[in-house]
Length: 581
Ligand code: FES
Image 1: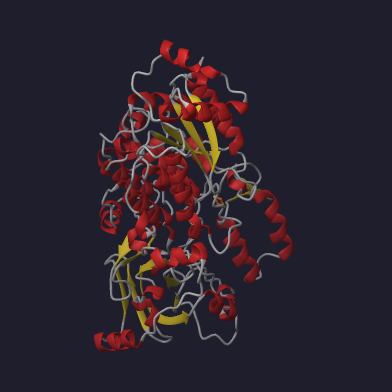
Image 2: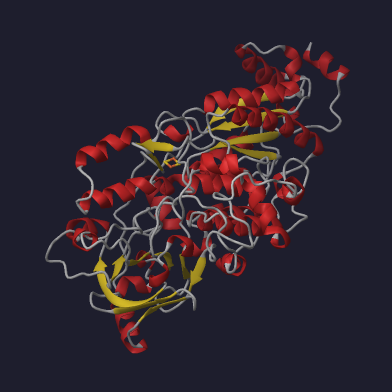
C-alpha cells in the first residue's frame, strides 16, 4: 500500500527520510509499522517531507510551558503543505530553576538536539525556543546537522504589573531587592510583587537574554519576521507558528539548508541589531558558539567593530522603560532594521526566502517612545564594548547602554571576593572596607570555575552603599550577568581565574582602571609584580570528578570562544547512518 502510494506521488528529490520510510524491506517495515501505532495512515510515508518539531516544553521551564500548543499550530502548517510533522522532546534548560546555572547545560542540550536530529528520520526542523539557553542550544545542535531549519520563539510574557506600574522580569527583581536592602520597600510588598511579575505564558518580557536571543533569531534570518516580539498569548504568535510549519515544508523542497541562510553577513546583521536593541551581553557567547558550529569565524573584534557606533534605539528595560509587549505594538525588530538602514547587510537571506532588508524596509513605527529613530536615538552608545588590558588578555565585555555614564571611566580600589560564597558571606558585613568608589572583583565564576559561567557578575551592592542612595558601582568578574540586569559591570574576563587568568591574582587594595572609551581594563601593578603573582598562582582544582560536569570542565572553551565544548565546534552534517537492526 505504502509502496503503491509512493509510485503515485514520487518525490522530486530523494529525501533523507526515505532512508527510513521509503524502503520496501524489513527495515522499512519496521520504521513505518512502529510509527503507525500512533494512528498514522500509510500515505504519510509516501515520500513527503518529514518535519521534526524540536520541543523544549517542560513544566520545570515555565517560559516554555506553553510549547505543546505552539507545536500543534506548527503541525497544522506542516500538514497543510503536504508535510509530515513529528514532534520530539529535548532537554529544556530553564533559567529560573536549573542549578547551578542553565548555562552549564546549554552545550549538553545542544548535543541532545544534534544527535536527535541526525539519528532520526527528518528532512527539516522547526526549533521551538524561548527561555534563554534553549535558543542557542537548539541553534547550535541544529547547525551541526545543517538541515533546512526554522527557529520559532515562544514569545514574551505580557507586561508585568505591580500596583500601578509595569514591572519587568528580572529587572524589577534586582531593583526591588535593592530597595528592600535600602529600606525603601517592605518585605511584605516585595513578596506581593511576585504575583504580577509573571502573569501569562511566555519568557521574560524585558530585553533580557530570552528576548535578545529571539531578536537574534529574527535578525540572523533563521526565524520569520516578527518572531521576537509577539507576546506568547497573542493569537498572532500561533499564526506565526502555523506559518513556520508551512514554510519549513517549502524550505525542504527548495533544499534551503541552515548553512545557506546563516552566513557571515547574517551574523553581522545580528550583532548590529543587538547593539540597537540594547541586547543582552549573553548574546556574545551564544552567537560566537553558533558561528563556531557553522564554521564562520566571528570574534570579539567583530562585536566591537560592528557595535562600536551603534546607538541604542529601543527604550526597553533593563536599559530603558518599556517592555516587549510595547515593543511589539511599536513595530518590533523590522522597525529597528529599517532604522539601521545603510549599516544592514542588505543581501543577507532569511528563511522566508527574502532578505532581512526586504522584510523590513517598509516597516512602520507606531510608537516613538518605544523605538527611537537613528537620527534621535534613545542612547548614543548601544552595542557591546570589548575591553583589553593586562586584566583580560583574551578580552572582557561591558554593555554601555546599561552602565552609568559617570563610571565609564573610573579608577578605584579593588575589593576582592574569592568566589560567590565569599561574596554572599561578606557583602553586608558592616566591617567590610568598601565604599562607592571601590571596584568590586569576583573570581572563579567563569566557565570552568563555577562551573557554567553563572549570571552572578552583576553582584548586588553592599547595603551600606545602597543606603546612601548609590545604585551603581564598577564590578569586574569572569561571570556573565542576566540580560535583565544593569550597571557598570565588566563581564566575561578571559581567561577566567580558574583557567589561570590574571583575574586570579588581583588582591584587595590593588587599583583597577576602567576606561570604556579607550577599551581598557587595567590592573595597576608593575609587570614584574604581575609576573611574580602569576608564577606563584596554584592551578585550579575542580571538585567535579565525574559525569557531565567533569566533561564540561575538561573541555569547555573560554568566553572569547563562545564557551562551547572544544570537540563540538564545527558540524558533521547528516550522513547516512547504519541501520539499527
Ligand atoms: Fe526563562 Fe527569563 S527565566 S526567559
